[in-house]
Length: 439
Image (cartoon, rainbow, N blue to C red):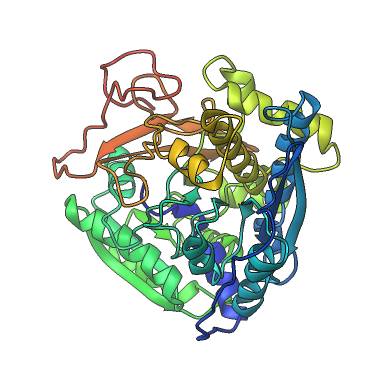
């Protein structure tokens, strides 16, 4: 699939506070057993447990732990216990990321890295070159095109590619004029460039854009005044959640309480439940790459992976609030274990990678649109994601294809209005092959 839209602002916030590294790292892969023995598989991870925005990254380990605990309680995989022995912290710093990845490869000799969640994945090339199976959040360069790098939902990202989804949303709310705002940081600007390209491709006029807002945002009243004078009835924001909340506040105070808002960041039940935020977020749309939280109760049979996730978190991580980061950890662990089972008892790294890359319709048991790993390292021909809208204190699913919570599009189409694909093979929740979109 394309760039994971909702995660762009996470990268923004952390890169503003982190340095850059121009070092050309080297690796040593000799020695050790690469974490594999007769009764266990040793696994590592690298995530931002300290530094800025840790809440957006650190919980990935909770999801990994819950999944591995569940598997180990059932006897492991072919009698081997999954030992998540090295969950390392890179402190959101690229040089530390390189050091920690080097430790995982050359010092700890892990069999695989499961649970990558960092805005500065500078060590990606080390893992790619060493052919260590790697799983996690594909929100930055380095995941594509290496065959051993497995991002949640696919490894290929393109921030500048026209985002069909945002144009579809604008069409659905009958907006013909749009405003787009972003921070003056490259990742935020790139995310919104894809938004702008998508709007223009499908005939939505971008009548105002400001991709140079200093971060963190302090006062957006001047932007709001210009949005109002432009006649825009739709605004897309590539800022982080604090900037988005300020934007909504200034829109309300500036006489635009009913303008349609689309945020790339802010899909979090805890944030919405905060009474200070509820009214500011009411009506805002979000786009997510996995099944929305809540399907475990509204349609558990169609999305069993969400039921399993919540049950395992309650059992093995009872003090942890389920989150998108934890779900990413769960899905990373699920793909890893799916590959282990397919590779067979005499597994090697190469056999694991080959087994996963034969999967043509992987959904993490209903959590994801079908991922074809034969092509998902370098791109694909369609895109499926889920829209939700904040309504009171709840996120409500919107639109959908063929009865699924996911709305799917052909990335090659330029048809106006946009007609979502229906009947996508293997799409979780699919109940029919026609009927168009629904609200």
